Image (cartoon, rainbow, N blue to C red; front, side, top):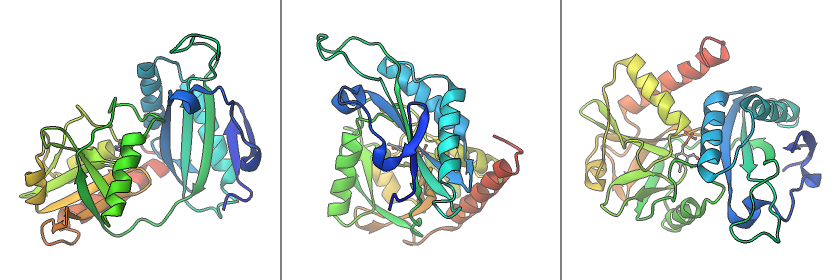
Length: 288
Ligand SMILES: Cc1ncc(COP(=O)(O)O)c(C=O)c1O
């Protein structure tokens, strides 16, 4: 599966089978790291700047510097370009991981900061996006929700629970029953022709979410960012999930109950078309 693929590790591209990081790496030892999943359309990495801004801000919140944006951009772009032929020229998913570097194992907990961050980029073929998705609500919330941290246990646990119940995605809910976000996606609902999505307090500021906000504006679809109770989602006309690799996925059932007619709705389809236009715009170099 990874035959012929290269990984970027601390400044150079190496065959993935030979790629390694230190046993003293703080990302491995204590989850002190951030990651980004990016999508390359052919060789072009979509919204690279926005992903790097989020990664760098997340690292700062975790107490380390991720490095210069241009250096991280070089790492991501070099990996996308180097693996393009091995992936048959198709769109790909990239993962940038930046950890807090190695720790002096003799230093007292939580360890002495120091040393450069560890920067790793890998890429792989995109899995086909399903035409629609189902979800279950899971009463868990991520720690430090604004940070896409390597420590991803809540998301992994929630997604596993969803899969055990035959659903595609887990919708994380707060203690008060508010819908927050998917395990690896943001969520929107449609009511009376308007879009509603939970506010950025308590959720990851999804890059795709922000593109959808732009697209809704272009299409003249009203949008509110406010709290959403699970009951309101269940009573919505349509719902949709957003994530970098999957773009916009119609969410057709939650907790075993259909949303609206239980099929992808008209507003969702308009947004999907608008999203594709937005990608095309960037590919043509008109906006970044
Ligand atoms: C918890 C969480 N929320 C939302 C998203 C969607 O973010 P983006 O659109 O930047 O991929 C992700 C992406 O993996 C995520 O992990």
